[in-house]
Image (tube, rainbow, N blue to C red; front, side):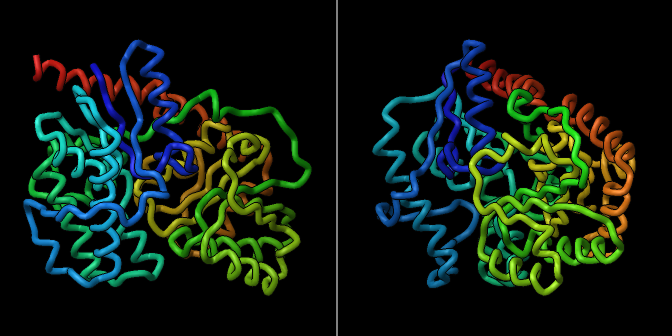
Length: 377
């Protein structure tokens, strides 16, 4: 089978999907499968001019809205780039972004298209204060799910929680299959180490949706109670200046290291002790699985796909969203008891090896891909 993996962001970009797919492709290629990557480079902007039409709704009802107009222009650019770069046919195309999926079906109507919905763009914009719930942008973006259901051959998503979210926007949610993301066990693995002061780490884009203000407030309370720690905050984003100022005002700037953007945080993630991220929404939360494979104790919020990864008290701790006292108590528990956090990390590693290894996702996708090979024969 000759398969195309169609991304939106280039594979060299960091982040769950873009960083995961090349390693997955390598596993398939080593097993004799023909597989290629395709994505839209950042430099391609404003090139496409072909009109865009959807089968299930009229997007032009949202004409003039900046977010919608940008989305449509990106769709046009993806069409332009695909026509220019793809000159051969494929037995199957697996897309990892709605624009990629819909464009591929438009240009290759006879090719089976599988689409994995990895995240909710509208929820991210909502939590980051960019759009309002039930506003025009929200309506447009959620309409895309029904369009995907109508046009692609198979919808996948990464957690049961997100499948339930999608159920409100499609007509037949039972046809959506769940395949959690997989991660290369060679990239993410434990390293023996001993830290005198507990080392906390979080890796994310610095945006309101990640709940980092809650984390800083909890860390401030942790310090007041006399619990030593260092927080390593890896990532960049629009609220970094605000977070740095908040750390100064809370008197915890000396306990926090702001790294900014880092291409390969997994190179030294295993040397820390606790991964913590109090997100306000996560479709899956890939970074929790990555941290678990590194043997870290996990602290997360009881939202989205995170509870599907963390069993509270067994392989990590779950707290409610925006609950500073609960997060403080969880951090105090894992920083104050080295044996307890070691056991949490050990069990987290064991579960992640079984549930989120790259070997597992390759086997599951093979089964899906072979279904379409049988249908074509």
